Length: 233
Image (tube, one colour):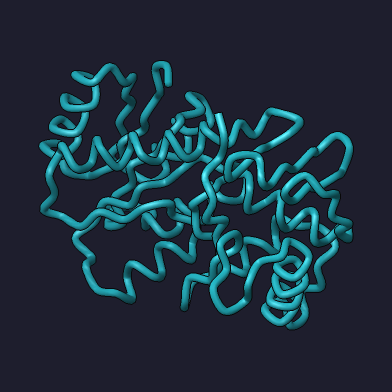
């Protein structure tokens, strides 16, 4: 996968040093920050491949850092926190986190999760004109504005195409309805959840995705939607 840059944000020095030592031993380039504002400034300068983010920071909360990052960046975020309830995890995912690890944690598990995030996000090759998934059964050609399902062209509206492209940019990552609204231009912000749900319903039908057991666009209850198939190559 090549050398990746990780930004570790935590106000506890022992945790920062521990995570940094494990990641550097695995060949990653690591930057650290102890405050939310410091994290945002470092993210702008270093363009990390993954952000490991504690939620309980002394100045700006991790939730606010996530919101700020999501305004300008698709960088994967792994939340590292003592907040362990289901509501906390759902809130983190709705804000745009890619994964959630509860303290106390195993550094080996943290490293494995980062590797999994990088495989997902790099596998999609977002800079490529054509994205291929599920062994070529689903192909999205951004330049030609075309989608092929099992070799057959599938006609989508602009909103449907933009929605599919947003999900395909990060296969396996859960996008909240609000995120999808902000990523896909032209959606009406009034009653946006109904708008997203309607587009997903139409998109599933056109992709031949069984709404009762979809294999492409999967609903994550209480959070949003994700593209469940694996990127080729």
